[in-house]
Length: 350
Image 1: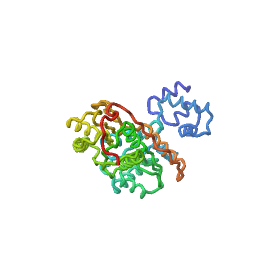
Image 2: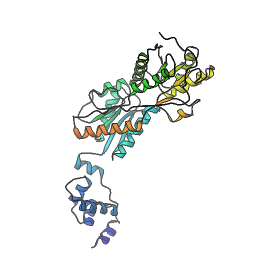
Image 3: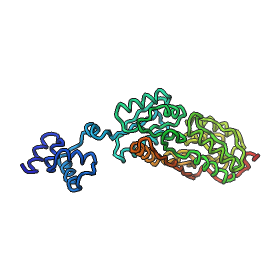
Image 4: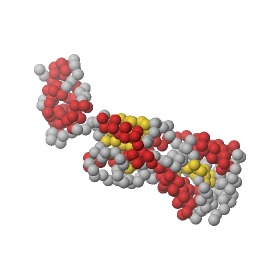
């Protein structure tokens, strides 16, 4: 029976590895070595096997391959149920990077990132046979839970603060806040007010610290920060309070959603932006350029964050207990129409 006859006969049923071997003129062991990326196959033979697989529309059984290689080509991601732009974009960036690296992704989405929920999610992913886990851990409680997890499964924390017990992929939140605050000071504002995020969020703490450090560096008075919950409604409420203080000429807001609320409150109070008050946000959500006025903000590269997280995890999977930390992703100041050189005196420098 020639190759055309073999191909015609096989098409009547799903092809198996032995069929590929017969069509390519090799053993099924050679086909297996090609599928699993073994270097001990001549390139000519490899190409012949690949051509046979394409002709027969043969798809390797992932479960069987996992038994042979000890790998499932699947990564787990622990996240939490949120519509916030940052965590959602981080998850999307991880999924794209994982797929580009040839891995499927299983997501365990949690309602809360407490210790018991995190441990349960990790155990469920282990039962699915994932090769490694990425944990989107923006809350301190989640970071604490990570330190208690078994170390036999490679893990990477994403947006989780300092790297100590495991690799961490992160955006330099502190540098972003410094850039936002420094931009406003360089426009002539004698100080910058801050609408901060929730204190249990590591990113909110890092942005708060960057704001303070930039004010110290600029020898500027530090007003008491106002704390929101990331929502536009909280920004609106805090913006109304800021609008009543005529010394306020510059505000750095910890995310763009809260900045939207601040902008509305200032508009309603008759405070012109940026003539009377300059406003900077953080994240550069897609809608930021369509705010009134378009919002100056700090852009985070979530695609690069996902790539670094997946790259760190693949290294950890290959190196076992040994891992190398990568530097944080540097954010970018995007200047639009919500900031300008100050026209007034602002708050008093002390």
